[in-house]
Length: 279
Image (cartoon, rainbow, N blue to C red):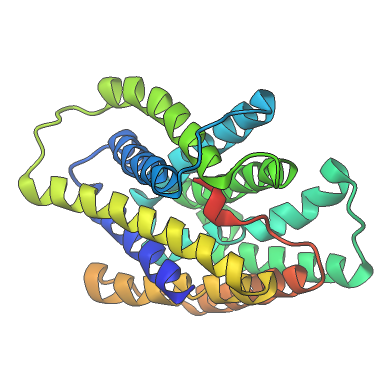
């Protein structure tokens, strides 16, 4: 699981680094292509046929995932790495908040308390309303969209192979991002280091995907959910040394509140669906 956290933190850092040259649409395009190719390869190695069922749910999941990715990589081009990572990891709070309405899960009083505590952490990271940046708002939107996708994955659990879900999502994401990239990217004539960073970003996403899948297969969901938050301090360290970021007290307290709430909600049974299957 730590491997997955490192991979996802590096993915975010490389996406932020390359944002100087590459539009977020190109980042989404490259990530989708590489992760989709890895998912197809895994299906081939396992000898599992690629079958798509529950087409409506798969499409809704793909749309939610595309919105989450577009918002996430756009946020990384606008806001500090640590801030975006922290806010994006608040998605378990949105999953828990939506669970009772969307799939009829019972939410206990203690869960409500943890939800309030977690969202207070989100507010601490965002800061005063007058100082909320577009990048921060997009990071929260990404977390909410990702939660929507996770809830759909829950409904598909056991009905559709996780790697097939990834392939379907990657295919839709490619169709979504290609025209976006053609219209938004001023020039695809990037420097060699930029293309190398883009490729590394996609490979890190694929490694994180595989490692997360394995973690959820071998360990309790609460443990994996808690360990996944290590991506935030790892990203903070990268932000400090690579981008000169200096996270403040509000950021630190907010991150702790979000991490504690996410872990507690997962432990209480309002589990985040396996993010590894989310693409």
